[in-house]
Length: 219
Ligand SMILES: [Zn+2]
Image (cartoon, rainbow, N blue to C red; front, top):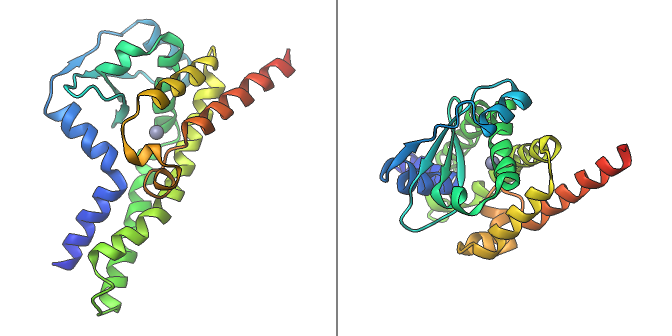
């Protein structure tokens, strides 16, 4: 029983954003297909990645801004993203998700999670004391796991910055996120680092500025 509790807790702790977003935005609310086929976004991603992406809109009551990629190649935008983001900003968020697909992060999650789940079960099996329980093991392994997944998130953001027509959009998009974010975990640098794989808004802005500088040098 403790193994099942551990696996469920660990999966939730390492995927809570996707779990919440999927439940609220993708499963239990209206999801509309977007007819971007042959539209500018479809063509942009096809040109940059060679992949034909599909797009969906998740209509949310509580107005949260997010995007995610569903295997094999569907990008889901929350209605807020589509309402608040201009074309340059949409390029960033779409190329970030496309980057996950280009680097096969969806497939790489599987062995990474498997190693952590197995390690957790071995720890629970080895120690038989009340302090080492499913909760403490899941909470201790999560921050380590997130540092590995941060490599994927950094790759996706670097891919986006490199391939954007105007990396300025990555700066303004992250400023918008910074202004509107309500999540306590994302507001705190310590909690974000421990419990999410994402870069901070400022780290992403720095990445975009670096890209802008490097393009200036090339000219
Ligand atoms: Zn990502």
